[in-house]
Image 1: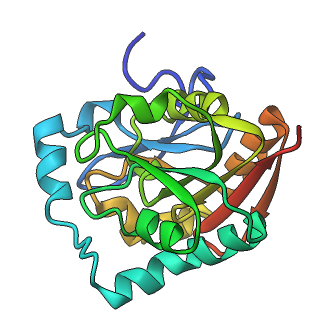
Image 2: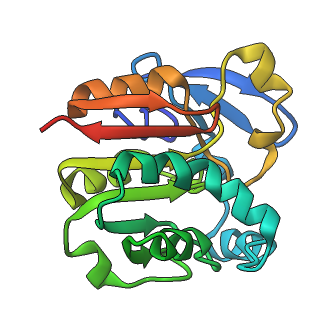
Length: 216
């Protein structure tokens, strides 16, 4: 089908033009509320990789550690002090979150298509999966969502950090959309839709952290 004629998360047809700026167009799905960037504006993998190299992922940066603690602390509270097997999905060049969770007693694996392409990490199941500031980069987030459902054990936990859009006026002035590698934007309703379909509970910890858990 032609570009932008179906939602890359739920596959629903006929998403509508939501917003347009000098950089690109954005479309919104009426079914799951995902907003996604024009498929014709996507960067090549080489250009995307070059952008990621500009990110500051210093393992010794206290500010970065505090930033990740917004997810690690509520996740560890959900794990209730027990040692579990977790996957940092989309860990980037500096897998500090995995180190923080490992230091807190968790057993961690990491995976990233550019910086930790370890196929073996995707061949087992996990008690929890964390994904910090990566889901907004997914071109076809429905694929990763389906993969996560297979990777998670029963009662498994999925902890996601990504800024959520709220409405069109806010989106039009939102700096988050201006990063050319940010191509998928989630609303609170999007996570409710995903949770209902996957039979998961959903907890919106902050405006950029959401924790979902399988109910069986």
